[in-house]
Image 1 (cartoon, rainbow, N blue to C red):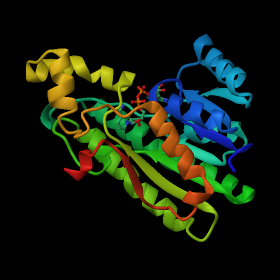
Image 2 (cartoon, protein in one colour; image 1 turned 60 degrees about the horizontal axis):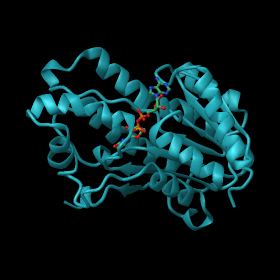
Image 3 (cartoon, rainbow, N blue to C red; image 1 turned 45 degrees about the vertical axis):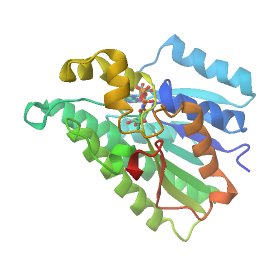
Length: 256
Ligand code: NAD
């Protein structure tokens, strides 16, 4: 059982990270929320989840674009049985017009951060004799789309890191897996809609239907609750021999 374990979830004051935090908290897991901000709302969010679920919920500010802050997040948490590497950003542009600083930021936040947090968390998991590393990759960790060079490169990279983490912990009661969501209607996806509308000369509904969900045969967005449920499953005893692999939650996208 996961009850009483501690989860650190990067980038969890919004979207998928928050959905996973809430699902784990409902299952009795103590949760550390994180983002780069340190606002009243961030701490209020932690207090709300704690009140609703009865578990301990802390909010720890750390910028996942900085390696030392990634490691400090884990150290400040003090314990990390479940590490969910979720923080991520997106930028959409053709390669020859892709701003270098956006490339660097995406590789740092979406890929490098997971290296640093994993490096800091594995000794804690080994000491506790149990651990789960859950990397939030993407359908774009397995396949590509135009104009998303940095994102696709980072997500393929984190799938590779997941496999190496699994091999290095294979003989221990620790697993490492990547969840590969298709489109989930979070602030990250909302932010892509205006650019995509412009690029394709379409309206909002048309972009959702013909561009975003075009690749998702179910024609439905996946939900943050479903991703929380998938993460919780990976923490269960039933998943103890699932390691070094990817689980797609993409309405059939990668079956195409
Ligand atoms: P979101 O924008 O709602 O959440 C991103 C989270 O990361 C936020 O909490 C944000 O504060 C945090 N974050 C951003 N930069 C940070 C930094 N420098 N330091 C710390 N935290 C930072 O987006 P989301 O859709 O929930 O995305 C979460 C993850 O899921 C990302 O890795 C994303 O690539 C992945 N994903 C999302 C979708 C989707 O359709 N929404 C699909 C596949 C994969």
